[in-house]
Image (cartoon, rainbow, N blue to C red; front, side, top):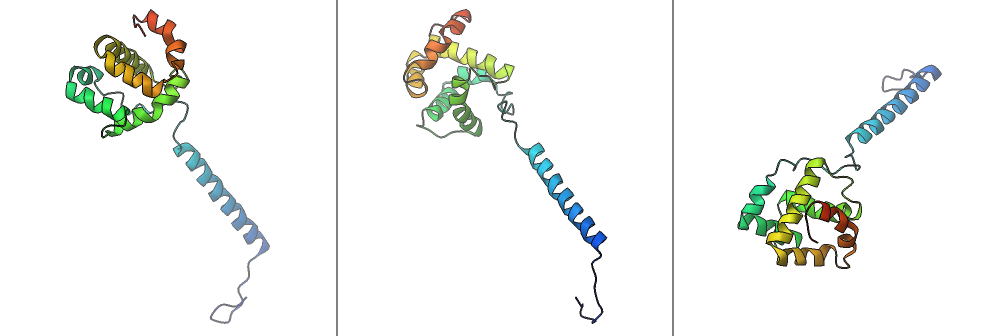
Length: 149
């Protein structure tokens, strides 16, 4: 091969092999970077764990916003969308990907709903547990927490 100055350009066999090794190394590094950057699917995000659920439960306006989001009858905040996204999986898998804070908040919210907002509880159950599959699955645990499902 000749360059524009008409001088021959040669690629030594050793240089070519090193180039291949370098390309392989770069691809390998890129794969490791992608794997490290991939979100961990064994746990739900905790970036919304600092939300004050007591404040939401005390405020009819805030409660109604989250409630309508979960029922697809109103706009959702980013945290509402995340809750709506993970709720079916959390119900199916006994909240196995939940943080301790998420489990505590879930118990508090369910207790609040069953004691203070029974109509809303029934509507949420109709959407997320139409066959009472999860109520039956969690009735014993709920009883231990003083929740009557």
